[in-house]
Image (cartoon, rainbow, N blue to C red):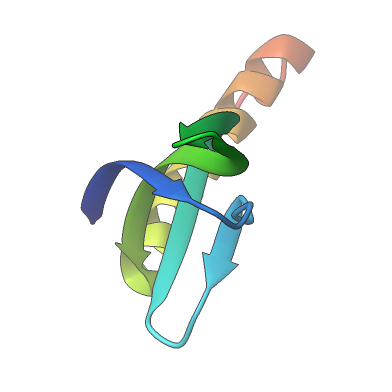
Length: 79
């Protein structure tokens, strides 16, 4: 995992992008007005994290296990 921190772009990012090797997760996307010598334009500021596909699959698998456990607890089902 590589956490790139707060990023700014002139193009609104997608929340999740999958390429050949990675999964890019963009969160907390906010529109920002920028004034550069009287020229006002819109940019987007967001947090960006890059996961390898294996890391992302493992993270999703762990989340699914937690959700399944929670659902079984709510429904009163013994595992």
